[in-house]
Image 1 (spheres, rainbow over the protein chains, first blue to last red):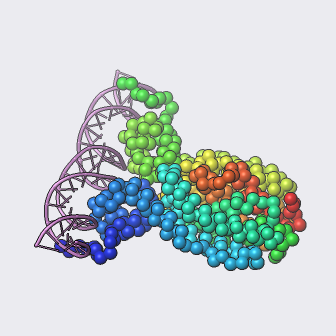
Image 2: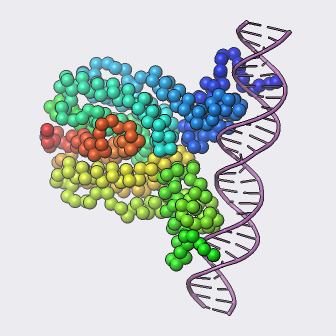
Length: 209
Length: 209
DNA sequence: TCTGCATGCAAGTGGTTACTTGCAGCGAGT
DNA sequence: ACTCGCTGCAAGTAACCACTTGCATGCAGA
């Protein structure tokens, strides 16, 4: 029989295609509205195959989340260079990289923010396992910069980094919803970097103008 | 017949109860999962009455959004006092007030962030009509502070305010999802105020330590 | 007292949902 | 050649969805 999209060469192609499709549909339609039928269609796979691989809708969701976290773990935001010198430029690169990634995954981010209540464990896993490593490296870099005398001593770097990433996240949510007025994402990121740099740098180290 | 919850004294009680219930259910279950049956139940009103008042589900949604925007317009975040003096204290009060309001409406905020794609006009209306006035007042206050010499000249205040509110929004989303580590919302707000103040204040005006 | 309006209740319609069952083909390893 | 696992397809089930219809009730104003 003419199977429209089946390949059957590699082992368990359908499974991978279903997971990829699921993530796509989750992002596009939300976790609630992502139906097994639509996911299977998107994957080019029979709906029954979905239930044969993952017992039910929730099983697919869990597997898809695990896959997402793993695939994100292999990615880097900003190259780690010498953060002790040229702090502002490093901040700029980090912010631009993180903001770009967030915009890229905007739909998925929205879905997870919106459904964090209904799927608390998945939301927590994703936030902790994907953004924490990034944040930790960021904190370490700032600590190095502080050791070099570029960063104020009287500020909690953990919270400061949280505030910086939140600034980028919140801005992305508003800008991509077309609710910003008269400025672009690049403008926004630039101001964030400027403010944050001026906020954490040691006063005598702030380059003015 | 024994009507369980009807009052029938005031005019059109059902309508108001339906709108209140709808907002509650939207926040709790999301826009997609909020069913007419559940909303009617929550309102203690027959489901048919819902369709008689608002033609369909979308009609109720629109009315509920309008109601939300109106009710928010009557609320104030921070009292407007003399912003030219004691800038940091004013920032603190504003931030605490806004953060508190966001936490209060956390579920609704999440719903709107998550479904902004599927209901772009409502999302835009809400963001623009409810948070813009607050932001505008904030910008004006900062401009006054700048005129008094407390605020740097070389920063776009519109974007800076956007960054500040985004910082609070993003932090709230993470903290209320139990994804913060070792700090409270108050800690977070305090650091945000500290960073932002150090970020926008004129260098000579920064009180150190 | 009569009329109109808002509401409740019971029932139903057509569509969609998650999920199941039974059957058949096809490729790979033995 | 034969089996076995993966897959497709057709069909069905029970629940739920938005939304409708018809009828009864009770309150308010005339």
